[in-house]
Image (cartoon, rainbow over all chains, first blue to last red; front, side, top):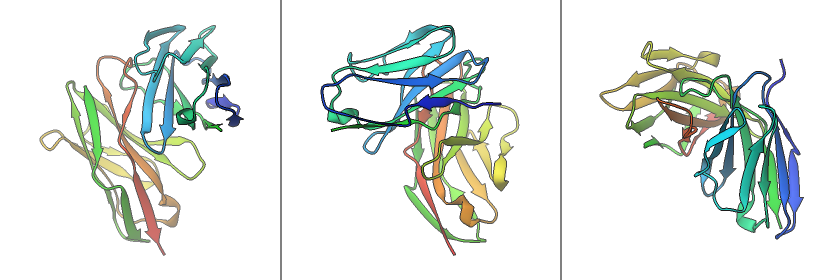
Length: 115
Length: 115
């Protein structure tokens, strides 16, 4: 079956612009996760959805970052007023139940470059 | 709270020789532990996971890992390295009790295979 897909694969934007990153999880997976992979910070957890709800948003780096999930499926991560330090690969993952023993399946990522 | 320490940022072995990638963890709860691999410009792929069943876990491509609670370790091994094993490897911990914290990643070990 289809895996986790993300779009766009690459995004170049100018400092101060808003960007939207999209994630399509594996069909039937109730849990969805966003991570950021950057050279300086490694892989960081950003936010987790169970269904359409995000129980914990404390991983988001600033209030410029927001995320939503609709219909228990597609999720968008929005970064407002982008800064150069936002440049990174943004990874999405999904899992069947969202428990700690579940395998998370990762998408290929969106590479964001802020000029 | 949980954390993961990958003891080597780079490991270089000759093709056909054993591989050892070291990982230590700390967790307030009984952890689930994972090893993921990331090939250049590819997504993260699960190699294996430990979820409190057998302490010796076998994964894909001949890799295995042993959970040692007394040493808080989860080292990854392979008897004979292949050129295709060259990649970045991440040791990952997930706290039992829920997925709200997402996964905590180690900083990665870059595995180099010498011909």
